[in-house]
Length: 135
Image 1 (cartoon, rainbow, N blue to C red):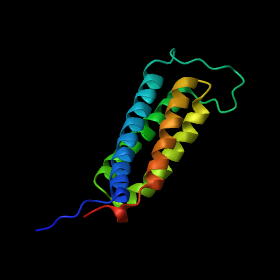
Image 2 (cartoon, rainbow, N blue to C red):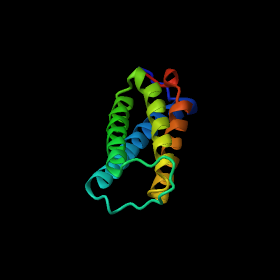
Image 3 (cartoon, one colour):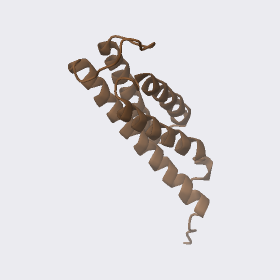
């Protein structure tokens, strides 16, 4: 019985699938924790009165909770190799980027960190080509 070694392209594709799943889980968990802190303790975050996208802090908390759960669930689907998961993950991570951009006045460094992680996840999902994975 002969086995062939996976090509470099196949190894990259397999690695990117794992990286994208991990990034989705990390972003989902951090997004969820951000939502919990906004819902549970309204005195953690401070924003000026002239912020255009100002919502009630509890509303922002629920937005981040829901996005976090959806991102984490999509990360699990990516690990299982579901075909819909790549497109859904890119859409959900894009929503996460938008939500965190609007959240910058509340907690700038945390938002910028989550935006950067989401962009890494989008890149990994866009660069990953499942048809090159070895079966």
